[in-house]
Length: 484
Image (cartoon, rainbow, N blue to C red; front, side):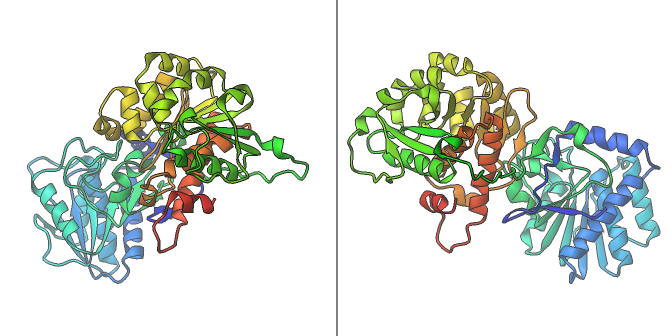
């Protein structure tokens, strides 16, 4: 099977819903697949796929350094080396010396490499035009040391194509954490299935472009997560009116921070909400420091009936938002909680109980890692060290849908397999873009979608806007709005 291009540095290259596996599920899938074939068969297919991709991305490279570890990842590299050698490339295969024998299939690959006339070196070459990183695979549990760390440093010292086999060496397959030296690949070929660590936390920066070759194996039954995919956009019926697409109210904007609430309101409006209302907090009532578009209606909180609205609460709310939160939590039909609303909930056991008591699939919370840490009572580093687990803990604890923002945003909900979002980039790391996401989520939720579907759709579209930003100027929240 040919390898499929999944992600480039500019965003997704596929719109498919693909399974993502953790280490345990990956090993189970591999073991089951191996049982149905003769020894070495699957590794030979992996090596061929790796060689084909390497030749495609570095066709003019003359010298290939194949850096192999002493596990099955190294076996994939050995098989790739055989093919590249047969195709006329100069090959330098390196493997650390050790007394411990290789695993069975990797040992077979080593024997095949010897029969093909390839020498195995215990040192790196003096020169190479492209590198295949087959040092460390999904079994990594600690930071690389010794020769492995040294060779990773050498790989990163050259400006050339680096193709990682399955996962960049030094990256944790489950979490995307790189606890020490880690290969900075230009391309990563994931075999059998995608791994969660490729798609979140430090993984997106380490992997470069992500490719997938399933080797003819179906991984869908083993999925730990799913790649969030392009949602279906339904054309509006001709027989529509402003009430057909829901009413969204934005409650937030303490004095001096009204702009955040206005950004969320504009995002909801431009994302298709039928009507949008802005409910500024009492300290900001009557303030003229921020322009509110004529399309957005302003209301006092007392004049709002929460049961009839999708409320987006917290944007620019400051500490003042805590005073109105009990009402919104108890009475709102649908609810999106962001920013200072989350900080208030983290600080109040009573507000946490109100959130936990809301009807299922009616609420979305959109924390960034620091807000998630406050809600979970842990550190930001603990949240980031296992983003999938952190998002699921939040969903289970507060009985709602969660968008854990960041590199590879996680969408999680109780009793659902989480999604990892493939869209978005570092351009979103600027004030106000989270308010835009909150407003977009509110609009999606107001269209009578479930909280889960609304979160998945809004997160995908929000990131895609940043992926499509090609202007020479920096992306701003206002610019993001204008591109909806």
